[in-house]
Image (tube, rainbow, N blue to C red; front, side, top):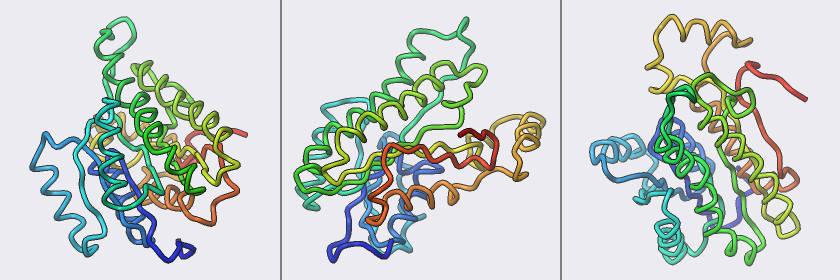
Length: 253
């Protein structure tokens, strides 16, 4: 992202200490951004491990605790970060959870818990940064969806619904903000080499890989590069798009 302005862009990445989130933080920092990773602070050992993982980037990545499922927490976070850094120029909504079960066995709690993080969290963060972006005439929002939001997946009616909703949200917001220099796009990862996929039984994982035309799982860096591309200053003519990064697992017009 060599087209950055003289002052480094400030990027906020929710779910920033997860498998994909950490790599997205690293990619943006390597492109010249100052990055704030946002995640829950409940597991201190995860936060400590994250700090070790990004220590080589010389302070370019900070950490802030917030629960993206809570609107007031996101409002307080946005106020705090804008006070500290002057602006939030790039927002990457990567926070997400799974609560898998077939619909016949899915509890209302598991439905609502997932949507509160995976979909409400996108609204909560965007709603609290969009005014500043529009006022400054610049913003990049990248929302992380999933191939399963495009194809559906057994046992994931909640997850698939939320991830499909993420792109619908992105398209609508893109129309609202395009003339003000703010782009809103979606990245839809396929199956990646993350702890969540590693937990899948080996025989099922082999079946998944067999169905991926490029013949391998994605790497977090594959996703992070796509995010950094859409977050660049030079990407101002791309908005309302969904960029699938799935190794050909699902192809569409």
